[in-house]
Length: 311
Image 1: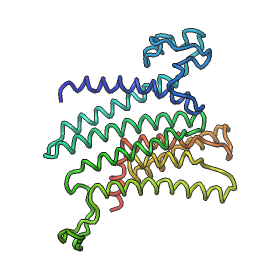
Image 2 (image 1 turned 120 degrees about the vertical axis):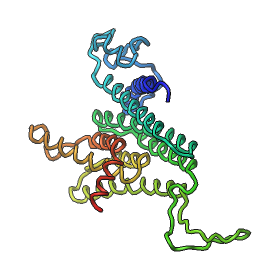
Image 3 (image 1 turned 90 degrees about the horizontal axis):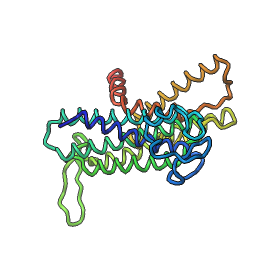
Image 4 (image 1 turned 30 degrees about the horizontal axis):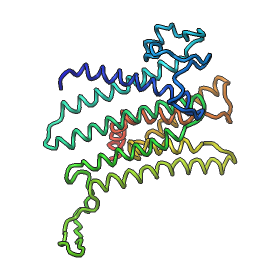
């Protein structure tokens, strides 16, 4: 592919732009405010941000990290979110370039459609998870506009991918057991297909979303039955279901495991420093979102290593 460096640079810049918009979502969605109007304003003095003061990363540096009008510090969250999404988009572009350069096969259309769907899905998942991570950390809220719409978007992308599967790809066979399928006006089919590729992908992903949500619902109900108080919000349940919609059930379980480990380590750190008690609420959604990002990048490799270890 020609000019790969330019493609990676364009992806980084695009990520910065989306990161700037994500900052607006992070600031306004937990307050149930519109992300379109009014235009960007300083949270301290309310002054409208000029267009040349709203350039991702660059304006923050040129302004000396302070608002042009009131001179109050601009939080580090703004450039960090922009940089995080810029780097995430850069990783997606690099992954696509590596995949395209190593592709050798006859199903060109299916390959590139799958690559485009995967890259769009990864970009959307990164946008959602980084936003939810910051929002939950700051407000202990996981807005439905991110989680529920994220589930919808993730499943729609799976539907698109299912429509472009190669013949026989991902189908489930009955092995050596043959069945006869007949219908009025049709010939007898003595094949052994149990689920076609699209059916397997769509039904399997839908089942994965439901099972992922059920896992956390059972944990939530069990905690409430034992401790007689709420320990986990429904936002965390919807967040895990969203991860499953994009990645599948087992990567979602890996995200849950990683998020739980990270949350436990942080809780022990707070307890050791005397900054928390056994009843202190943690932003578990933030750790779950980090687990989702790790699962998106390394999930297939980690699950593969674990599966090889068991066999």
